[in-house]
Length: 313
Image (cartoon, rainbow, N blue to C red; front, side, top):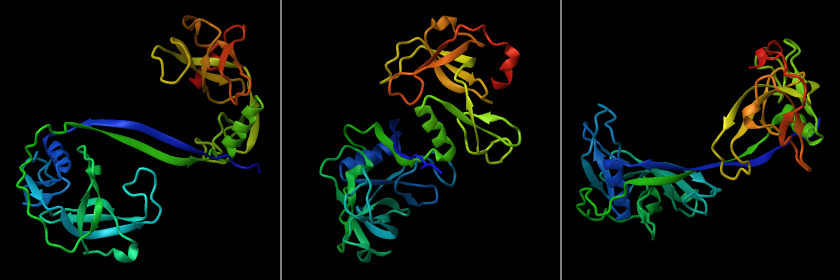
């Protein structure tokens, strides 16, 4: 069996959200080295604060200052920190119930090793040197044996409150297309398109999945399809995508390659965008060194009859 492909992939985007009065006060307080919770209808002080009561679902705004010291309620050791985590050296993820709070806050605990951490240990906040009004204003927690410090008396009223945040959402993972799609990708490198036929319904899947989603049986019979095909449906793109060197408007279409049991995506070129139509017969255009067609262009054949592709819409 040929080696299955794999590659590191990253999905990343900035997530922007506005803040209500409770979250605004909480994050602004962190910027000022103050921790604020909110009192719920049952008298509990919630840290981090919730905007709505977990019991009644009513909006709550009764802000309460709590101490920057607290107690570890549970923890887990992180022996290999990843990019973007609070510390670059091994640390513990800990749930810490701050003094004056009734719920626990998740953050990093800086300790020399797992033997130095235990449930019930006393800790305090280590503040970041530069604070902007974000959870990262708490650099981490650290062991602490002293008494809780005196509270500041903060009520949640601050100058220049934080009203919104931008958080970078990122997922790093290794993707493997599996046996079937590895064969498909390798075939594209030779300018061929292959699918796999279901032994039960005889449908040819392109790209192949390794199993028929309809019949639930494995597929391993390779079938070369195309290279020509038929436009089954399409859309006209009028908004230019970032980092995509294609002038708008252009057409992106579903193309049923000859012999395939379903349509795949492809860009249509070599024809004015307003002349693209359902049933248009097209063929792939490759560029030097490419592993997949750059676009599809008209073949000059008569349009396909609707009945030949209506099941592939």
